[in-house]
Image (cartoon, rainbow, N blue to C red; front, top):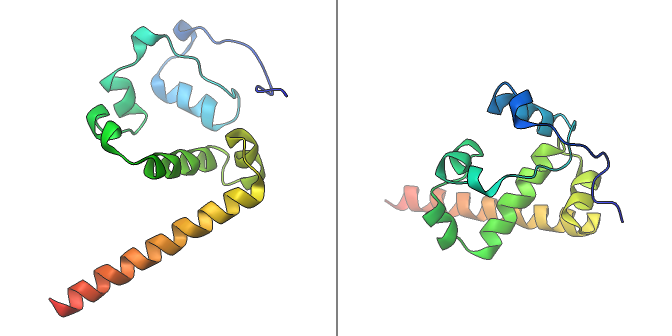
Length: 119
């Protein structure tokens, strides 16, 4: 099984900005990003849209999974077949997970609506 559809490296000095790197990732010009461990930290997490690292540690595995699935789906421009392949799951499994996320969100909105009408 091939993990990368295309290979190669881009030296960090060739990138003008973090935004350029993100454009390459989102545009599918690169399939994988390898980071130097010295480059990780709060600033990188912030730029990637992650909350405080301490908050990440307090999240449930289900919430982390959901966030990861939605991020991969966004990076494939909602291409569910490609997202499922990247995630290493069956497309039907991805559809089922997305359906459960929608059902959970609808239930949460109903609870909020009910609590606001009773208050």
